[in-house]
Amino acid sequence: MGFALSNMQLKSSAFQNGGAIPSKHTGESDDVSPALAWSAAPDGTQSFAVVCHDPDAPLIKNGTYGFVHWVLYNLPASVTSLQEGTSEGTCGATDFGKQAYGGPMPPEGHGLHHYYFWILALDRNPQLEAGLTLGQFLDKVEPYVLGMNRLIGTYQR
Image (cartoon, rainbow, N blue to C red; front, side, top):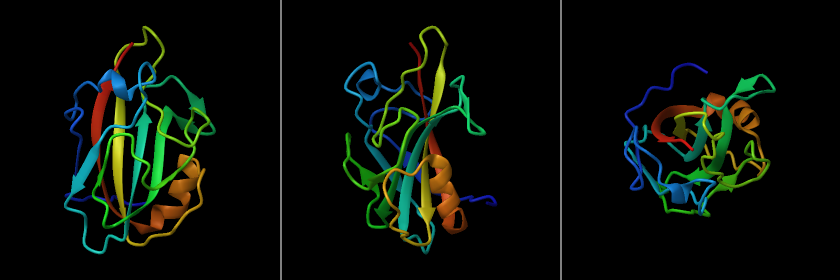
């Protein structure tokens, strides 16, 4: 995939970009996904996907690094926000081994981790099956990505 530069903006009412993720959105508490909203999608957008990844996790697995906390896709272009604890879209597989959001839960004493919430705009709505890993999902949608941007939250135990 080439660069997918865009003017899209991704925000959350739960935390500011670069700010701490509240405990209710972590594995230490309610473990519900934060509310997200995005704007300025590229022309031709037909669907969206959301990914949450922790590159600070001390894990190398199947040629990738970090830890995947959320893979959510099949969101139609009419959807530009997700409520807290959303049931919208189709969930892929996380590194927790489940098909649902899994909040931050870094190893105790490992320091501050950064959680990258990505929004991807696609030029089609591929209606993908549930349970795809992040790698499988990206393999299927890479040619269709029009733009992307991120929101970064932090958490430590």
